[in-house]
Image (cartoon, rainbow, N blue to C red):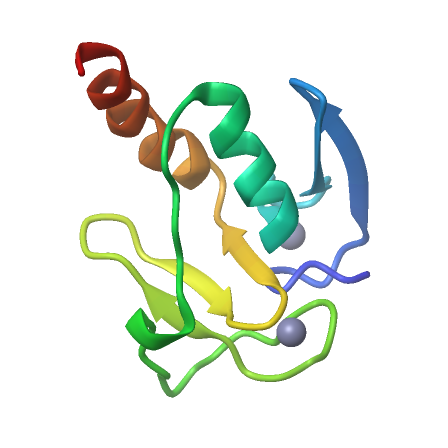
Length: 108
Ligand SMILES: [Zn+2]
Ligand SMILES: [Zn+2]
């Protein structure tokens, strides 16, 4: 699969027993939805990206799995979403999203 950000090859990497595709070119991360759910379970947090809360945009990146234009999701950190397949994070975005979720999860 190609990175939606820079077109370099995506490499399958396993972290915390959860697989993800990492781009060697830009450090972007592609997470299929099932792996995103698995990551949430491992970390004890709820992460949900649904098809209804994404907005299409003009300069859309293509989904690495189906090639369709992805929408955007989120406010502070905007990630790319293909509703049937997964989510793409630029370098550092996944950590930026997970950090406050993990904090909240631990304080509950
Ligand atoms: Zn890339
Ligand atoms: Zn797709």
